[in-house]
Image 1: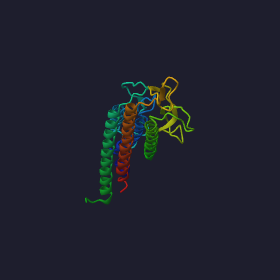
Image 2 (image 1 turned 60 degrees about the vertical axis):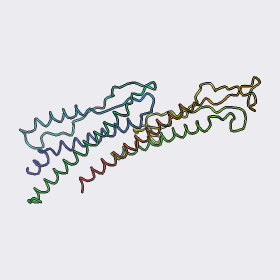
Image 3 (image 1 turned 90 degrees about the horizontal axis):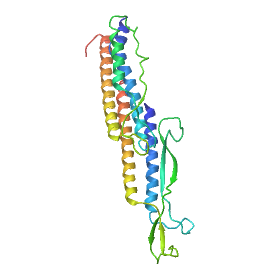
Image 4 (image 1 turned 180 degrees about the horizontal axis):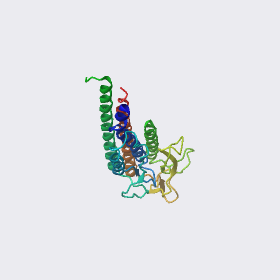
Length: 132
Length: 134
């Protein structure tokens, strides 16, 4: 019960899911960058807003029920084609937007990793029963 | 996420191939004869990209699908003393515009850099994730 609460009731599963999301989005942005000169290629992206909204909705309902009964594994955001100026070769690239999104996504990824590290170190402290 | 490094590598290879094609265009900007030495101006080439990696088209990435010949007309100059001039004194030169080639080279170089940056970011993200284990 104690371990269950530590692993499933805190922010750990949300952070893990967020890490999955940033990794998947990074791959999508990488695909867009390598296809920056590919004719008729349409840029794709995963909506961070939609993902966070799904995550928020799911986390709201779990405060009153048993730890572990609300799962986050099935939360999924489908890729969508991005809008943007269409060039003559049929590609709607925006190098500036792509590099910005990539930097923002990497920062988010690193932030989530740091938060997860903090969670794990707190768990370790609790298990060792001493503050270091 | 290790897969992203392969995606980046496919982008680097494709942009390098594009730069090779541009280099060949610039090098042959004044070539009026073919490899056999017969009067036949060099025709400009273009690298055409397509989605998917070269070794696996279904995998995310990019590859050079074909090197296409530019069908635009050759540049004709009046040079009666030139050995490749026709009966009217006109010589046909390659359909290569150096300004266009320079701009394309710059674009390919920038795209190459974008790929390198993306791969550096991927490495930083992987390093940060691996720190979770430490």
